[in-house]
Image 1 (tube, protein in one colour):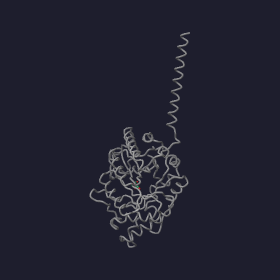
Image 2 (cartoon, protein in one colour):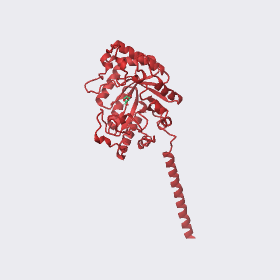
Image 3 (cartoon, protein in one colour):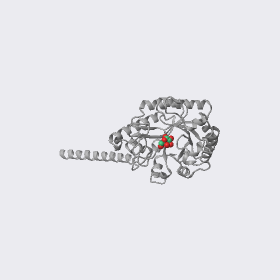
Image 4 (tube, helix red, strand yellow):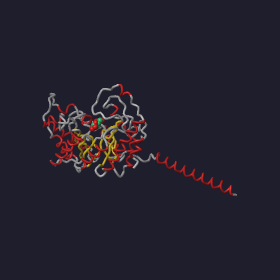
Amino acid sequence: MKRLLILLALFTTITLQFCFESRNLQKGNIEMADSSKGLKDYFKKYFIMGVAVSPRALKSEESAMILSQFNSLTAENAMKMGPIHPKENEYFWRDADSIAAFAKLNHLKLRGHNLCWHNQTPNWLFKDAEGKQVTKEVLLQRLKEHITTVVKRYKGSIYAWDVVNEAISDKKEEYLRNSLWYQICGEEYIAKAFQFAHEADPEALLFYNDYNEIDPIKREKIFRLFKSLQAAGIPIHGIGLQAHWAINEPTRGQLDSTIQRFTELGLNIQFTELDISVYPKEHNSREKKSKDNNTIFTAEKEQKQQEEYKMCFELFRKYRKNISAITFWNISDRTSWLDNFPVRGRKDYPLLFDESLQPKKAFWEIVKF
Ligand code: GLA
């Protein structure tokens, strides 16, 4: 009898243990496989979660993944001045319109990128019919015509515009970039761009957008620009920090002090072009060397990238009251602009989704809070 009781007790313990473990396993599986939850859901109470796209991506298998993960879009190229306004009297709307239509159909937010930049500008912009450089009056008139036409077309569809992109110089001693905009118009083109955009759509939030904001010297120059625009009463509502980062930068201290500094402006902060390269940061493009041929996404790179993403999102959440949106620059590691920058043809893996569009470890790391 005693033996029977011992056997019964043993049997019950083993059975209970088995049930308990299998329930835990199931729970774990459910969590790992919860594909119904995307970034937009995890960060629902924190930020708008966006992604930069091409019209082609929206017609591909990536579109379903975009809809499950994000609630905001930015046109990677389609709204830039060169693509959208190739000739003085000719606009090319197809690509930008298709992105705007997709956003509308699927109730996604849309950021406009961008209205005035020194890159990807059309050839005709700075030249007159004889090929001579135009005057300040002509250039500002062209800027006004461009901004008014584009902003009015997407009025009500685009909630925020990057009005001026990258006007600050990277050279330590130089304040504003010595672009053709600056050479022809002086500093004034920046304020004018904001005024034209505000007149065209008084509801749109207007951003100044730039990169390498974590560099203390550049950061202060961006800060100075904001202060001067604010002092002059120029309509400017937000600071766009591009956030093209890497496994070794920014450090926690650098990012914390950067965000802290910009909160002093009392404006909306958005991270507009986030990616984290798996190579140590290089700021300038260069020739490919033999060591660049090793492009395997090793466990070490994966680990470092995961830690960097984790740290960035911890700080984003710390400053959640000041930050309204995070936009990733490209969808997945399948393809990104970093495959060609700073080294042409060197494969990078900067995003949260792998080449099969599956969430990477970094993804699970940032949604765990
Ligand atoms: C800058 C621009 C973006 C894009 C990236 C590189 O950050 O703002 O529009 O061109 O460079 O892809």
